Amino acid sequence: MDADGVYVGKAAPDAAADRGWLLGHFKPAGDPRHSDEVEVKWGVHPKGERRAAWTDGERRTALLVLIGGRFRLEFPGRDVVLCERGDYVVWGPGVDHSWCAEEESVVLTVRWPSIPGYRVPDGGGGPKR
Image (cartoon, rainbow, N blue to C red; front, top):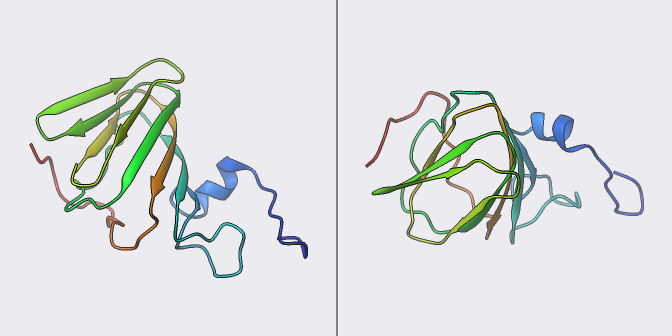
C-alpha cells in the first residue's frame, strides 16, 4: 500500500493470497481493502471444483457475475447455470447455497455485509438439497 492510502493491485495474484478474496473484514485494519460493509472475490475455479460445504444460516446478500467459463450455483430446490459472460445471479439472507465450476471459470462475487463465520475448511461437507 502506498503512503497515501491507495492500494493498486492485480486481481489474480492478490486473490491467490487469500482464497480469492480481494476486499473484506479479513484484510488487516488500516488496509484500504479492509471493510466490514462489503466483500469482493475474484474467483478462479478449475473445472470440477466445488464449494467444500453448503452455507448454513446465510445472513448476507450476494451478487455473482460470470467473467468466463460455465458456473453452476446450487440453491435448495433449484440450480442456476451461468454460461455467458455477464450472466449473474443475486441472492439474499436466508438463501443457503453451494456451487460447482462446470468448466474452468472466473467469477466476480460481491457480498454484503462482510461478516466472519462463513469460511469453509477444505474438504468440508457434501450436497444439501
